[in-house]
Length: 199
Image (cartoon, rainbow, N blue to C red; front, side, top):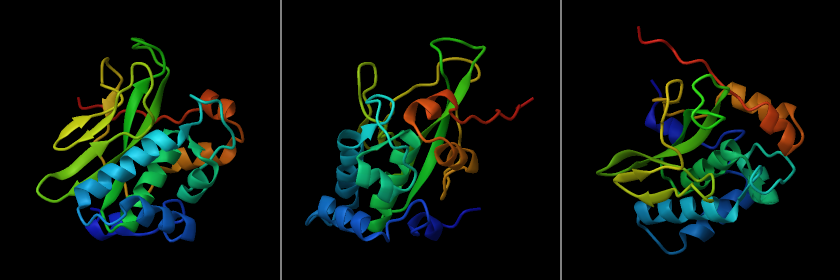
């Protein structure tokens, strides 16, 4: 069981203690003292100002929050690391969630891959999921608690909303973002995990 305190810590990848990340987090929050407003501002910054690596065909491959901020780009995984760092820097508990999605429209045969998003703990609401991957045609993620509006819906067998809220990214995600050096190599090797049968 992960303690709430773990969702507030600076880590090697969710590195809000990095001076540039911490400065940006405070800059985004401005004079606001409202955690929900600060969460919205951080979400919209990562969603709109950090370019999705594959959408924009951008290198380098980023992993740490500080790298994402420095280069202005990241896959959904890396963007979730930055958003968690910005939220934690503002003393707002934040974790990482995953969906398992088909890489091809309506293909129940796969291949499948993980998609990363965030969960933030908001008082009187609880854990609230939000997806800062970046909007585009067919993708319209918004921050409107308590109602979730994510980038992707689960549509077919084999896809799933994984229920865990992680304080750190999954090792399989870190491995891919560390091993491959260009956005297209990452795209050809997107991480996946098998679903646990409920039978």
